[in-house]
Amino acid sequence: MKKNFLFGVFVLAVSIALSGCVARLGSFTVISTKNIDWSRSPEFTRYNRRIIGKDIYHVIVFVPTKMNITIEEAVDKALEQVPGGVALIDVVLKRKFFTIPCIYGNDGFIVEGSVLVDPKLALLSASKSAETKYLLFQPGNNGEFVKNEISEEEYCKRYGSVPASITTNTQAGVAAKNIS
Image 1: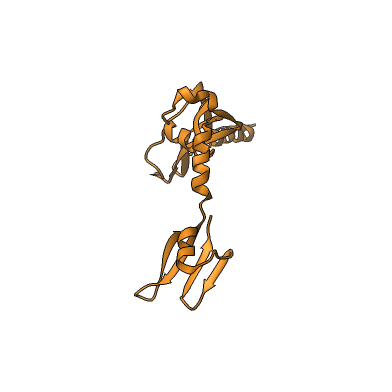
Image 2: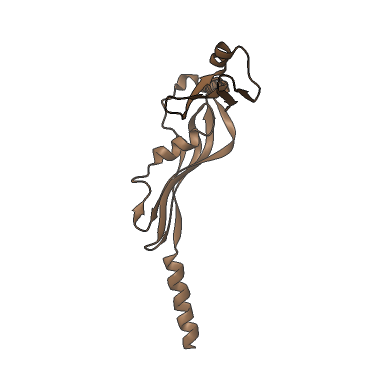
């Protein structure tokens, strides 16, 4: 009987020590950290799945990996996942924490919602990311290679043609690789 009681106390103490919690802080119709031109709202589209953004810090043996957490950072991380994202709609805001005393813990904000997309911004960000870039390695003065990132246009100006996925020009000591 005494063993069962002590075992029950032990299980209770371990479960309290390893406790974690997720608390729902609220729901929002629209939340954003960006300036939005609402006069263009009829052009906006709704992304077809829910996105999660988190801003979490960890504490490892009393040493935090980050000094503060903010809802704004969690919203920004969610919006960055969708090109042209300007706001989250039908948002749920949560606070999550977990701790193992004196060893490890974490704390953070989690936002989840559908992204409102501005098609003009989505096209703009798509055209920026579509630009092909190449890494150019050239011998430096001290015998080490120097790395430069150049556009496909610049590569063609220097070497006359578009390279295959990886092109090596051993005569000039140059190697380029598509990194996009």
